[in-house]
Image (cartoon, rainbow, N blue to C red; front, side, top):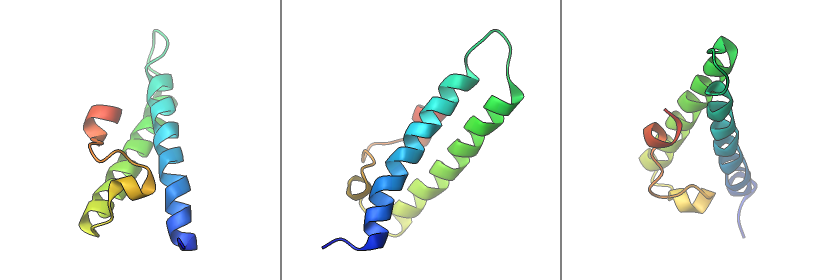
Length: 78
């Protein structure tokens, strides 16, 4: 039976990734650059880059927390 921590990560990390994709999309909308939207997108990028790298460092399979094993933060969010 999964622990509360495992359930938490399983639910939260994919939601963060979805929010990051949304923030990136919103930062790219319009004719001008919205500094707040760009900063928000960068913050999500930084957080997800760190969290995914820590999954790898601790040997936690990405798929176990619903993150694609081939996920690349630079490709997806930069």
